[in-house]
Image (cartoon, one colour):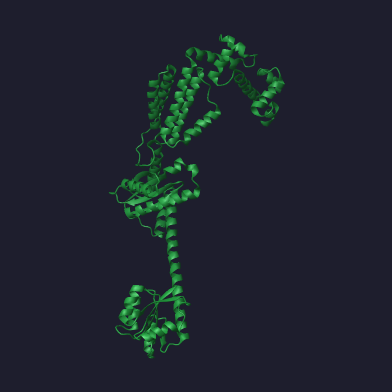
Length: 531
């Protein structure tokens, strides 16, 4: 609804205007009356009406004075003048100064109605135009910001020539007057820990909120821009050389934690003196962020000075692994604990801030220890499934402490297996049994015959064998025979019955049944599949 003020030095005229047309039906509310020019100006200043209908000749100021004041204050108010004077000069001056219309007393209803509708239409047009201009400004600003974000995204990745970047900055009228640039990477700790529980739209909303808060702090600090990098945010800060970035990073961390109840990890890259060096700052920030695997999250991580790892470090890691093996065999628990800590110290130094490198080093050590213990008869070697499970578990860890706990538990399990093995004699016996079965699987091997070789009762040997291999004797022998059968199927043209004989089965039907039970296909089907 539009607001209107009526003004005339004769109250009876105002009363007549109120009754002359249906104001409410026209969507207009009369919010005030004035009887002098000065009083009208004060009322306009107070109420900012949409429409004023006033006598052009009033005490303490003419209607022309009023319209000049409206224009001076840049108000959107529309004015309709009425007067008992019919001189053309009044109408001419009124219209020249922007009056909607000029009506002569006595006022005719139709003429007033037309003038009011005309004023309402002008107000509607201006409102729509203003809305359009406002939207256009927003779109232009948004488009400019979008182009700047795309430009700086390319700058951080180093896939734009500086000549092209300079042209785009000039076209966008974007100025970065401070002499230094520093990149910050913002990682949401909750997304790392609970990533599978966050939907994409939830991530977007969360990143949008953090981006807005960061952008506000950047504006207070100086110039800056926030862009999205996958599930992280990248803040580019243009700042004076004497003003460090760490306090800003700490403030962002605190404000996000306070207002959004979210924990961030913020890494700060190297400070560079030219926009064409932004990639270098970005790379160092990304590297520092990766180091949160070792330092822990929820803090500000400055640029790292990483040691150079070489063959000497790798040699030391291998020596520590050998020492761990010796301590395991000697069952020196306390010494083993110290060696494990040395292992992690060396792994971290070799990794140089890389989670992937740390996982690979730990995995390699774990596999080598497992194979060496298997070689002396302590426990079975890790199956492919176990190896995959280890790899998946280790890569899923968010922090080095979790990886350390996992590796420590595995080495501790190895020590317990050694205690259960009952000493060196049992280990040697088990080694002899395995080697014999690997070499003589094609012969008529039985549990009883093998038990007699190591001077054990068959019942005791059965328990002894399962303790050391986690498999019963018959299944272990079957696995050896069938693995050899697979080799023969794939690498030779032997008939199925010939292969059965070579791997220790006198009955080809029994061999086929056992093969299908393990591999899901009959031997001939398996052989055909490879062709």
